[in-house]
Figure 1 (cartoon, protein in one colour):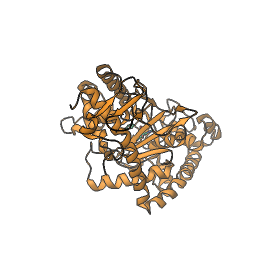
Figure 2 (cartoon, helix red, strand yellow):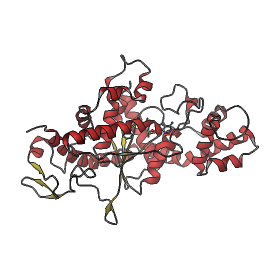
Figure 3 (cartoon, helix red, strand yellow):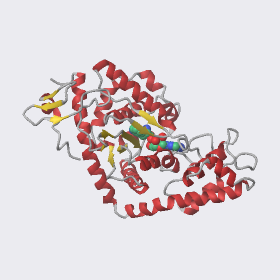
Figure 4 (cartoon, helix red, strand yellow):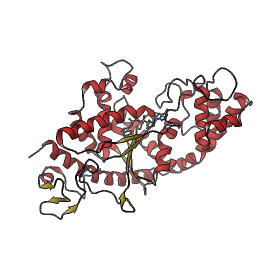
Length: 385
Ligand code: TYM
């Protein structure tokens, strides 16, 4: 997709740019003065923002991402997408299909393109609204990759080696995995820091990556002057770690070898019923949650989230009824919850340009902000003359 139409960029443009540190102006030589926020930790990029005021106050900025890989499942939905949707009216939102991240594990051009389209449809079908959220593809905004490289210089090898996701996904085969898998969290930090993000709504598995992002940002700020906002993870107490149906000791995963691990958002009603029927249960027969009942805790969590009930009220409802009745109802709860999403998905699949148009417009808006932020970052680091 094309370059930055509305903001001057490239060497000549940012050479001519004077950033009035601590003042209220950002001046472009020979061009009009843009009003910009004071450079503080909060608003460090001197970037004109989206129109986002609520009673004169800027709304908090949310950024989150999802990889276009594997089978999108109810864990992605309950741990992340659903929260993005329900909160989108409260914040200034950016949601990103992180295709560059998906290159860290083996894939093919066809699979990547297919997954990107299918994920875009899923996000829209789940209720992300382009009027309220910028939705875009990461590789359409080149600044993500550039900032990743720059942040590599303030990230330590030891920090990256300690990332549990690297250990999990690398499967202990450090020598053979891609270098991209190793620096993956730095690209994630770039995604977040590029947009002065305040909140990052994610599932529990991403917490360590957000901590690394904060550490990299702090180190950068200490070395070059306050430039990046320190983001906070937004991890909900329930649903942040939906476990596999066939093994409640591991999380539900897009890349699981067995489809019985997850319920895909695209699974039809019979498949959902079969998967729930086969879901592992704990010993005993009481439908109760607890540390000694990881399988039932997980199933009750899913039931509670899809029906907006607390786990204890679901427990009460099924007191003395046994696993069979509970599972039968759980399957119907999931079928009912996914059915409207699947109907919208079918419509979007029949019209693939709908999602593409949203993504193109989203990338244009994201690029405008990213390009201005990067001009500031380059200047801070002493890049170019
Ligand atoms: P990804 O694509 O693996 O997952 C997308 C989101 O789904 C959440 N999630 C889960 N939540 C609950 N239970 C589960 N079993 C479960 N599995 C996945 C994830 O926590 C995530 O919120 N590195 C990220 C993508 C990323 C990103 C970013 C996220 C790239 N840049 C910047 C936030 C901000 C990832 O691989 O997510």
